[in-house]
Image (tube, rainbow, N blue to C red):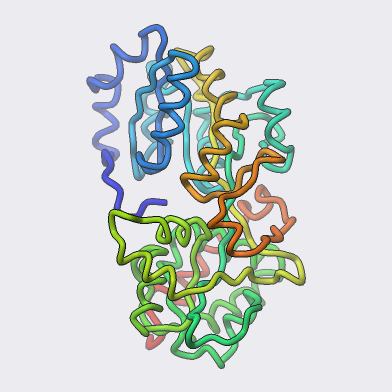
Length: 351
């Protein structure tokens, strides 16, 4: 979730400055602090961090990045001030583990709160929320209330599909799931069909797909469930409510294998200087209070059993998640990215 969010940008050049950045040294060694490196939007995690500080008295310092987090931590090495990593997408969670910048956690509270299917078997990362990669369909122009991902390649949708870049991690994970289910050859034929049905060159974020449907540029789009909830409750930009009200959420493959879901999650940094505080934060984020905040304020699906979703999310209907392990889907991300380029998905329908 990176739309419209201010962030501190980083680059490989900036890595050389990492160890001396003013954010790092004084905060990292302070008592009563936990340092967070985050790919998540500030507005989405601040309510959680405020609640954590209120309950524990432990302050939080957050460095927001939109790229290069893993490389930065690797470059900082044992001098890294990072205690906890927060991010979306299974691919990024796997990346931080593979980069060697995390350490395993064996914590009874966390393991009791988060089901095993949302945890790394070796304890390097933990899912905190899930979100469905669904179809946004025009309430006016799409009569059907059921759909499959496979159907997106049907010629009946020619010139009617909008989507963000195929190289965005959300779509890469979806395409990787199609490879996992159907094999690379059939998945590529499917993706060629999706490309042929595009109404325009892939562009923008998930909200932009709903806006395009509202504007009549296309009839269906691909997006995450929580974006619809965020648009429906956006009092600062009320025009987004109109975009959201123009679409209905269809859960693909609801009667079959289920809808592709991804996660947001957390990991403990390898050299966490405030490890005890970091574990307290991780326990808090996995607990009932934080999971309820995720549900109500972010319109995400909590991973902790028994925590209800928001009324907005309830209005979409019940989701049946694809049971294919995310760790298996993540293995096909590279193949999915190469397929997007090979098919020329981001070039749009005319190429």
